[in-house]
Length: 227
Image 1 (tube, rainbow, N blue to C red):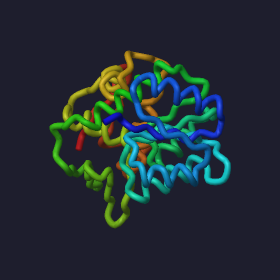
Image 2: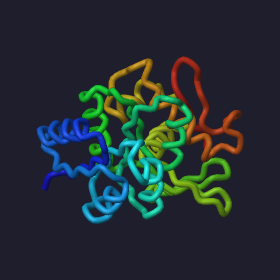
Image 3: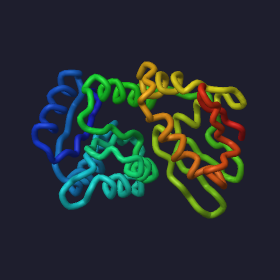
């Protein structure tokens, strides 16, 4: 059975181009131009990955992402948008998006990210189901983080970054290795995907994200987890 990808994109040329290229790669592709219909298709068809435009008519991409995660949808969500501001990226990640690709983007990069996401959803990681980091308990199968009575949702890539750091806790994990293993990309100094997800993780896990005690930066190399 073919892997199913849902595209929620209101630009016809963009949607058609993505559909044609993904079908050429062997995926089954569903396409809709509205957030409302996207929510319905995601619930009914259970796609393995969602490509979600941010600027949609009616319900925008942020709200679609929020509603999907609230309903328990766990498949990866990659946001596609013309916006490039840091605050937009962080907002999307905090709502449960797993990645953020700014238009215009390279098709090869997008395909590589999709393949890496889908590959990792099928792989079994040698990590416990739950782990306590500081005062926060993270449950990996559900992607939930509990701080006292407050429940937070971690996006797919946030979970994967945390898993990789946990597997090497106390050791420095190089940024380029995280980018290659999780995103399927070779070292790209200007690609901020890893850094953006670390920022988002710190907002959810650290008591003071500006002075992290658990997800530490090792300047010039990468990151280290100290539970």
